[in-house]
Length: 150
Figure (cartoon, rainbow, N blue to C red):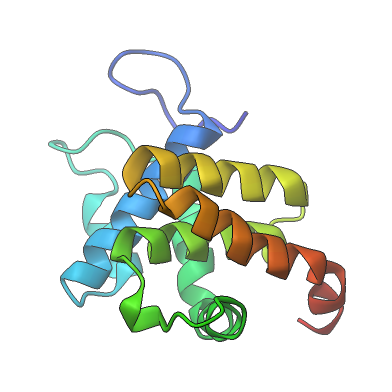
């Protein structure tokens, strides 16, 4: 478990909640055509905002740093879907999922996929979990080869 501070209700902020928060920040940044890291920086330490876990910060910064490559992979493996056609929440979930698959060495591939599917179930449409699972599954099948050239 990563603790990046304590939530107002007490206790450390878990990874699942950290991922959800990262998706929300990435989604909001996309909707506002803003830079996600800048948006995050405005929130960190703000009194009116719940504490932001270190894991959330790492995910938002990592996705932002690798976004061009992540988006290339998503476009290549989303079979008939352009990034512009994807629901924005699904795109944010997929970006976090791909980042964790390829750049988060401490997250096993099945966990990265399962967590992304869980977020899609919680945050998006009924069709989204299957879509997210399919795209991340295709990328997961070649993850070792991709990591070797990143």
